[in-house]
Length: 246
Image (cartoon, rainbow, N blue to C red):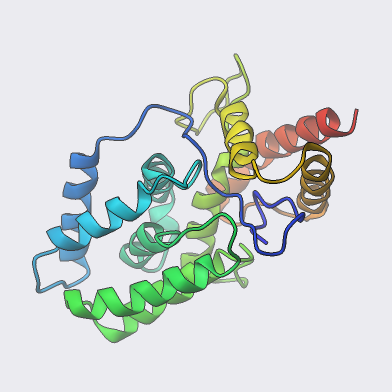
C-alpha cells in the first residue's frame, strides 16, 4: 500500500494519481530537463527517445494523480531538496522513474518501475552503481521510510510526500509552489483513482491510512521538509480525517 495515498481497501490498489494541483506542465521543459539530467548521469546515447517513452507512460489515460503534473511537482521539490542529497542526479532520475509503470489496481507498480529503470538506464549509458541507486530509491517509495542517514532516500521521499502539505483554500503555506486548494485537488484525485471502490469502503480505508500517517513521529526527514511541510501536512491530514469520520 502506498503510504501517502492508499486507502487500505484493496491490496492490489495504489491510489497515487491525480489531475494535478495546477494545469498540465510544460512537456517541452520536461524534455529539456531530462536531457540535462541524462547528461549529468553520464549518458552516452541520445536521451530524447527515453524522454518520449517516459512522458508517454506518465500521460497514460488511467492516471489521475501520477500524471506528468505529479512528475513536474516532484521534480520541483527535488530541486528544493537537492542540497540535502548525496547524489541529486540519482534522486532526480528516481523521480522520473518512481511511477513510470502505474496501474491503480496493481500493487507491484514500484517494483515494475524500478525494473524499468534497471533496463533503461544501462542502455542510456548510466553506470551500474548509479543505476542500482536509482532502482533502490524507486523501491523505497513503497514505504517512504528511508534509513537514518539515507540522504538520497530522504530527499526523494520528502519530495513525493510534499503533496500532503498542499495549501487548503485561501491558505498560505510557505515553501510550497501550490495554489490555494491544492490539497483538495489532491484528495479529489485520490478518490477518482479509487472510483471502483464504494464510498463507505473508501472512507473507512482512507481514514485508516490517515490515522497511520498521523501516528508517525515524522512525516518528513529532510531539514527543509520538517521545517516547511510537517506542520501543514499534519493539519491537512487531521482536517481530512475529521471530514471523513464526522
